[in-house]
Image (cartoon, rainbow, N blue to C red; front, side):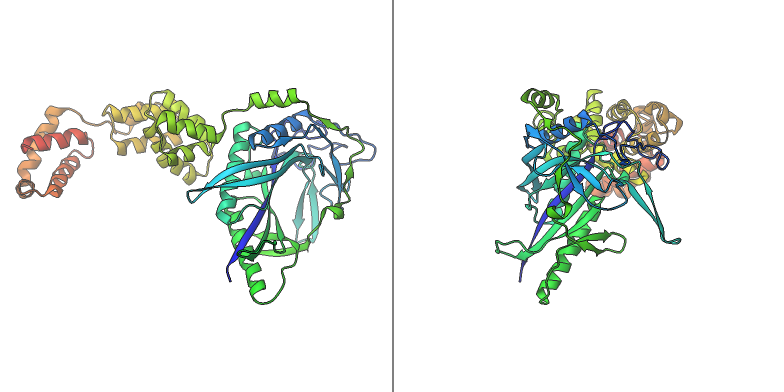
Length: 474
């Protein structure tokens, strides 16, 4: 029997505000434990929260960027649950009147465009972080994260594979970064994902029983978790067992999930309107101001790169996936580098250096990459030498031409000197000359290689190639 996978995602993104959602405590990551707290975000009795206006604005911005309808009159609700990560025993969220509703994003997978519906985007507060000490059998809690503002992006069950989920998540991350709504630093927990998954026989209309896997914080882990849960559910069904609706925890190191608790429904949380917060009223003028402030989004930028800069679709998609890369690329082009050459360097050597070093930002100015490309075009350095210059720029930011001189990477383009070298190579390799005259082009490469070897790689290969052919009358 062939099974179809049905997936819906719940994406939590911490917002880029300086202060928390209901108080003035800092949201900066990495502070000492429990140093960014106050009576409001720790839920002390009698405190009154005040909604951070920037949180609403960021939610509107995300909604507009994801083709959502913006709710003119909304409210916030108490989501009741007893867990020490929020000491007041409830989370302030939104239930039936979220800020954004009925949106969508189009994704491209295996050459086909798929539209993934977005049910809602709502605001809520993040919870604290529990730290478990298994050795002593106790748990500690850090409330620095409690009250950090979130948006939760909830999709329709429109996703049908792990690859579609990955592509959708990458697009959401890209949009949030472009708009500045979130820094999306997954290693810091700024972007997390819950996976709702079920399987059903292909062609069946009714959904199967779903499970939820919580707080997965990398795209590769999402792909692995979906593959594992799909396999687990199919195995249960084909052996005559039932899938139990539950919340599960994904252990990425072991590659397995564990049941945490039976799956909660809305009534389990006993939602009711938050009595300490006024309704959220969003007029059309506010929406229009936010709409006019939106930057050029990834799809628009990709289209422009293809139509105006002549980049292939693949290059444009790769570069525009990251706002940092796109901004860097545009500045390199502004400094005079041909767009396709600039994209080749960014997709190739630059990305490799970033991955090998485990860093996210290029540590040297775009002007220096453009200047390195210019040195190749002028024949000052070879492409091989330019790669060494780029690697050196990751270690120390300095003028590429200075690096080239310090590392003896300047090409020898003195034709009179190179001509004498070429004549000597031809004289020393009569057999190769005979093979060339007999039509064996491979021998030409051998002669050029010998000349480059004799120059210890310093000769300009274009000049060497031309001189060899001229001397052989070709």
